[in-house]
Length: 133
Image 1 (cartoon, helix red, strand yellow):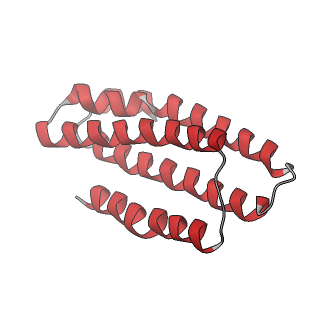
Image 2: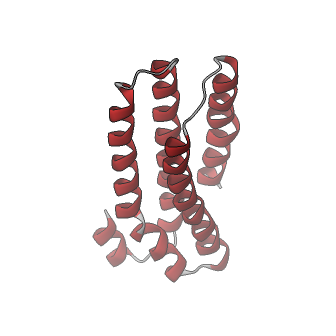
């Protein structure tokens, strides 16, 4: 329950706060960056769904699915960070505030995955845990 509560806190406090900051600062996220963020979000959402399934149904298969997503999450977030670095040098208004908020969103989504993985590991056999570490 603590991991699920931590996920809720990140969404309620951090991500909503970042959304409000986007509005307050008049920052617009480009279509390309929106797609990058949606890809990460989609994968993280799947990990949370699978983690909840793993815990609620004591499903080792669902738990393993979550832990196996680690490489995908890392690949997506690294790709997003490289995209952000390239965009940082673009000559657009509010580029620095946009970069800061976008990087924060990426980090918060990665943190949500961390808690989903912790949830899943509560039902994963020890042998599998060592392989996913």
